[in-house]
Image (cartoon, rainbow, N blue to C red; front, side, top):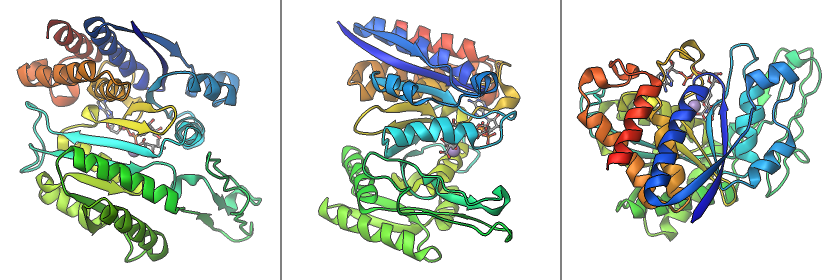
Length: 374
Ligand code: NAD
Ligand code: IPM
Ligand code: MN
């Protein structure tokens, strides 16, 4: 019998509400498709940090590395200065395991209206580069008083050595370095090509901003064009501002959208709004080693613990995890159960986020029953 060790990091806020619902779905699918799952829970997040001062120790990363995959909730808490936990836990994990793909599919579901005209038949995959751009953590602010130097270590190389930004403390300023490498751009572009081919599509849209940020995104366009040509596909360049406009005008004509890290973050939340809610949007952080699965949304502290969080994004992230583990049938059953639950529910049986009255655990229970009965 196949057994998987899954690392669980519920994290903060509604992360703790939605992760147990994703576990219910995985366990129901495991029972149906004859495999088993062992959970290894990691306590990191705001509570742990406020109690112990510890963010995410290296030993924890080593422990995570022994798991088959990681299922995460969300990180971030209003009691902790922004960035400490998000960078120290979430981004650290993405970088440590070199999870260079951030796959963020946006799907319209039946029974979930889009606020946009024509927004009800969206099937878009944002392929977000996940280890470069403005996210590498090399920056300095004069308010820190002293020269600051932070580097992100990647398996392929260490940046700390050759980028050393110093800021004069008497000048009021801040600077942040964005990185693009041939390795980074070509591997994410190849992933986007493979995905387009799998979807039966020939075109990839690349969102950049080379008219203003010429060096960085001009480089991106050049490398991406080379790779896409090699792969025999067609690359369509669009500035990210124009892309946002086009997505609101007519999202149905887009398929695979390739984005540098920061633009991908922003565009995926825009798409979540178009599809009807952040509570429906799943994501996969994929690398050659350990991969991590989490909703696109954050910890939504204002609704944490109230039952108002929609767990479907976490449940769909678990479906992506099962697919990654090679459990295609189980993955399809979880996704299909979400689809059927949304399709067959009257409007009051929908999650609170979608205008219904069902709480977080009631939605999780409904999806679990669907998986059991399918
Ligand atoms: P957010 O995604 O937490 O919330 C944005 C809005 O969407 C809020 O109105 C929230 O109530 C709503 N929302 C989000 N998910 C929902 C769900 N499943 N069901 C119902 N409503 C939902 O973004 P934010 O408010 O900018 O950030 C809150 C905290 O989360 C911050 O600390 C931020 O840094 C962190 N964050 C973490 C992640 C992550 O861990 N992957 C992602 C984004 C933000
Ligand atoms: C996301 C989040 C993170 C990001 C933050 C919390 C660092 O917004 O996963 O979308 O910017 O990647
Ligand atoms: Mn985001």
